[in-house]
Length: 317
Image (cartoon, rainbow, N blue to C red):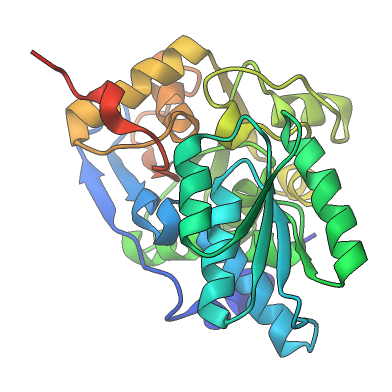
């Protein structure tokens, strides 16, 4: 479980290590005409191309401050984005990183991991298999295990994005929409905004980790498939994310793969922002009406990652 004070501590720890990403004011009409104001939080321009750098730095720096960061460095499992973040943060802090990824991880993400100096091991076809291998490796070597979404310091670090939103809007926000995979971003932002704004967690119909967990009263395994599986492909919601979602009243929303594909192209054509399919799920909720803002609602949509091949967005003659 994490709370606001954990996110505030993380903000102090990662200050100067992560970027304060822009908040872009947009016309609500193309997405939700009833909304009074709307912004895009351009977190895809964060270090390594996603919000994950926030949690990675907080986890590694907190371990170093507590004397828990060994010379063996860090071991992580990731569909790509978390691995990039842990590899980058480890390099900045000066320790080695080993990252386990599924064999299905996009080639662009694997290449970037290696460019950041990480040792890359490809295992299985699902994130859960990579996580199992990483956990064993950390136990065998003594390296610091870095979980993509279900460690308190990771979640608290992701929540610094929520504090930035409050600062950039002057607290004048009602709702934040964001994509959910394992739920680390959702947990951190919901903790940061508790009592101030609601969080809507949007996920593909093909990977409904949040919706199923809330229905079952606990995280449960779900099948993983679809266009966003490379970044939202967690087999189940994290325990921390579930606890925070229940406590803060996170609202779930589901969207189809077709809606995600359309939303990703819309973000490019309307705002000239390149994002990955997982990121586009939050926009798809507004495009399809899976989430409908009330009249006068003030809404922030988080664009959380851009580690994608953009060539299919460019119209060719």
